[in-house]
Image 1 (cartoon, rainbow, N blue to C red):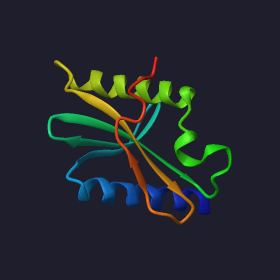
Image 2 (cartoon, one colour; image 1 turned 180 degrees about the vertical axis):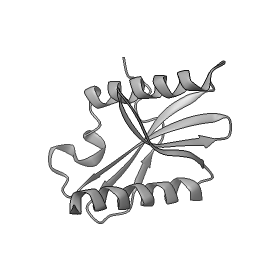
Image 3 (cartoon, one colour; image 1 turned 120 degrees about the vertical axis):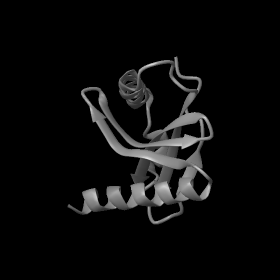
Image 4 (cartoon, one colour; image 1 turned 30 degrees about the vertical axis):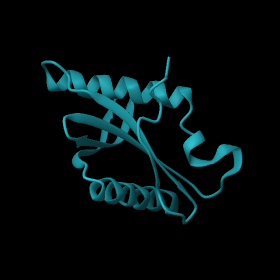
Length: 117
């Protein structure tokens, strides 16, 4: 239960950070058979798919490093599913990560895996 609460609190902190930076929330916790996208936001004409990662310790690279290639592929598949539901020509898109280490401040990593194969 604590883990779930910490996850929700982390998502709220991430959303607040991104809203303060001018992004607009479209939806939270988009789920499909491919996985889940924590936040879908818009920055100008760009649709931003946001993965929020919170880790209590920075072992093994910490929160940002936990978004490995396998997780990236799941996010891309979920985003494609989301875009298919929009119909028409998809808008420009990117994938951001908001990493939170322990009780520290959220770190926003825009376009976090643009070079994904």
